[in-house]
Image 1 (cartoon, rainbow, N blue to C red):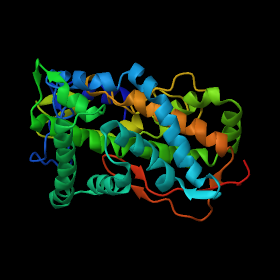
Image 2: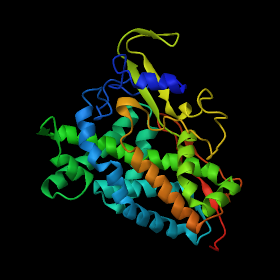
Image 3: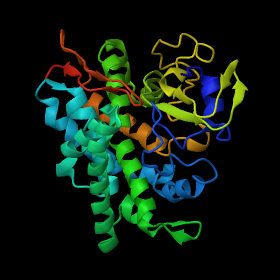
Image 4: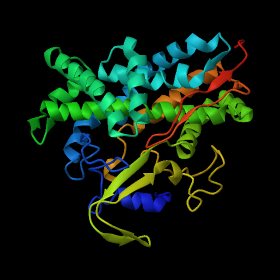
Length: 346
């Protein structure tokens, strides 16, 4: 288990010795290959290029009006109640609804799809994975087949028309990419948001400051990403090597704990303190190197817009006392309940 920023950065940038072709701990080589996540460079590059037009800064900027409308719609459903389970009512809905819009998935199945993703990330055995893998595959296969017949302006239609090495992708490639997108879009930003707001609800001075100075919200977002990254990046050792005072042997599994990289006291002073004024917020929430998360622009934008719209309507809020906050731990950590309350008066 690797926790240091520099060592993680070196490992995830060295596919010659540390491959991403297997990413399950305990090791399970039989799992489905997810493209481009399980492809080492240069094999992953053409697929990342196919995705990039829909995740570029310009593309995400053009999405902002729709993202803002979606955030307002979801927040308005709870604001007059004076309380909600933020993890369930907001964090598990907003990023997921944005992803479903991008993919062209029906919004009325959001809870169903989100439940499947939660089951997938909670799985620990091949038997447990075997229950969710076919469900996700079926959903994505149906969507691909629909868009092959009826193209639209969504991400799946874009991938169907995209080329890899001068050719269109076959069904297996499309399906692998869409399953990976499903898993990422259904869970990761949701979890960062939940942990960030668990802290935010306990810092009334920061709430007041950001409500008064919303231009500081991007700094809040970056500090939240530094402290509350949720993903670990497993790697399999592809060649025997001696590094960092450790003997690595072919077939060993390594967990690069991206969530700990931002708390490395060698690169961030007082790393466990939430400080939006920190001049450099160094972290690996989106990893680094050839497998940097392609959705990092979207994730930052989602969290910023949600916070802007939340503070317009709920400038002061707090944790509901004596209520449990349930967690899920694994390769992707999650906060599954976060009861909040606030004054109904705006």
